[in-house]
Length: 79
Image (cartoon, rainbow, N blue to C red; front, side):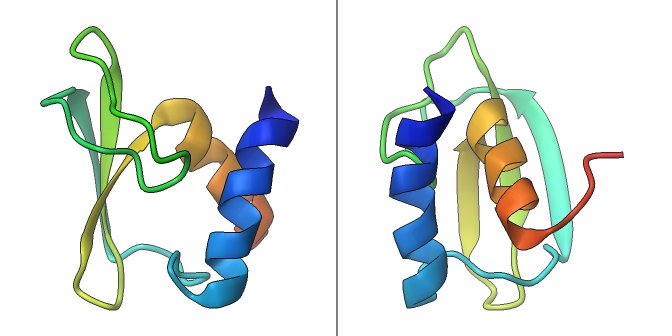
């Protein structure tokens, strides 16, 4: 559920593990089986993954739903 995902995402934002800044670059495409930085689950091969490069120069991957929830928590629009 969204509440469960937010319970995983919010502490990472508070600790700085996930940046509150707008990503420098964002890409979407077929999953390569990466680990989701939002929920800590693997992104299945049948799913789309969002690849994010933040200001800290770290590459992170997200499920679409986790990425949208992260954007919402940052106060960013999905439009």
